[in-house]
Length: 216
Image (cartoon, rainbow, N blue to C red; front, top):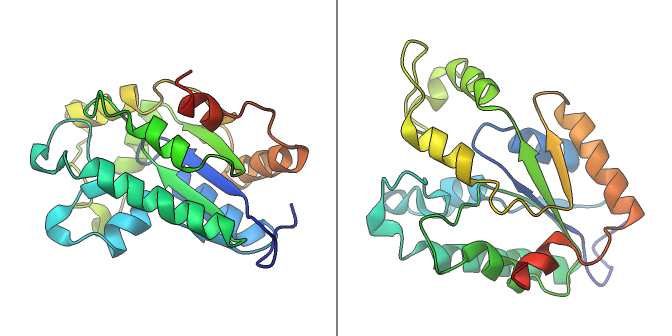
């Protein structure tokens, strides 16, 4: 895996999973240890640093229907971000991007399939980042004050909020991946190493994104 800025194309790694499933930690591990420049073009960076405050949660729109006024904008935001991922890759830059894809609110738009088509012909590894809801809730409850207003509030003596349950149920549909990792049993570094090994071996064809683009 020796991509650099003067190669024809870079490598793309798309991480998909629920919030707090550990995607950001895997991104950090990839950027710290993989050869060549790995650009983080995921949903967190897009929402926090690019999307205007009044249009958030924007591309990270929750599956609980909290912002129906933004739903019509979501396909355009996804399209713009995936077009940027493709452009970086074609210029020889490696890209790692984290998402919490869920199409339940967007049918029949099929956002994930459209995103896959935008990366047609490019080397894409689609990784499902799994984590049990119990572990996700533990992580939420242990967060510091800086993240208390980052998403819906949780409490140890209350039931799990419906949007969190909905995202957990929907994010891995249809569940077509090149690789799946579980951050409740492996560290971010171990997950990144598993991803590295698959990239080095080469992803078998058709890849997950090729199947998604074709409607498999």
